[in-house]
Every structure is written in structure tokens, then in C-alpha cells.
Amino acid sequence: MILSENYKAIISKEIHAAELRIEKQIGRRVRLRERTAREEMAEDETLMIDMLGLVAKALGMTMDDYFEGRYVEYVDLRTVAAILIREKYPLITYQSIASSMGLRNHTTVLNMLLRGRDKLYMKDTLFTNKYKKALYAVENWEKKKSYATGKDSDLRGRAVGSAGER
Image: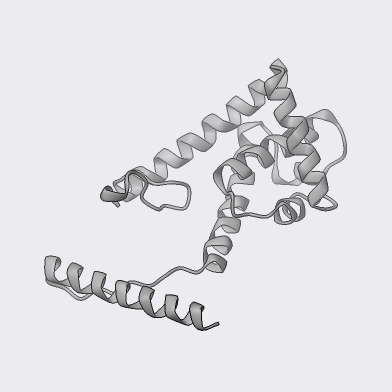
């Protein structure tokens, strides 16, 4: 616990020093704060729901279709969405993905991801085309978000690039 308190103190000092440097450069006081992993995860889960809608729309389906049966169209929708969510939001748990799609539990998502990766690796043309269509929609969504901020950003709207550019 003491080690944790020491790190908090060091981080707090670093944040304060950064605030002073920024204030000196722009001539205006700013407040910075550390984002917790819980805040980051909550934001990712909100964006995950947006992404589910985007993937469904890209494949000509609706959000309700995530909760449908075992027909291949519905399974592929869930699989493509799960693959993209894991690529874009690594902090989101398998259980969160499962509950957002009405699946039983995290092992269902794990098995779905394995099958989906196999289909991509084996070049299953129908599945690969669905994946590419959804990926294209997600990448366009990312571009629109980065244009809105005026700089390169990921789905969370955070700047990306080398450490010196951030």
C-alpha cells in the first residue's frame, strides 16, 4: 500500500509540473488529471455499443439481430463484431462483449473469436467479405472522428502517433 501511495504522489507531482509547463506556454491555467482504468473501460464500453450498431448497419442488419438465433447471418454478425471489438478495445472483457450481444458467457466469445480467426485464415470468402465490409465502416468512422478533432485519433478520440507528438 505504501508503494502505491508513493506512485500516486509521484504521478501527482508530474501532472502538476505538466500543468505549469502548459500554463507557461499558452498563458492560461489548465487542469490535467489521470484517467483511471475504470473510466477508460467505461468509455470503451460506450464506444463498443456504438461499434455494434455500426457493424450491424454495415452488414445490412440491426442491433436486434445480435440477439437472434444460430443462423449463419447472425453468427457471422456477432463474430465479426467480436473480432473488431477485441482489435479496437483490448481493455473490454470477454464477459462484457458476451453480455452486450446476449451471449451466455465469456467462453462463448472465446470460441467465436477462434472460429472467426480460422475463417479469416482459411480465406472463407463470404465471411472475409463481411469482415472487410465492417472493417471499412469502422475505419471510416475512425477517420470522421479524427477529422472532428483535427488530428489523428483512435476510436476513443485520443491522439495517436509517436510519444513526442502527443
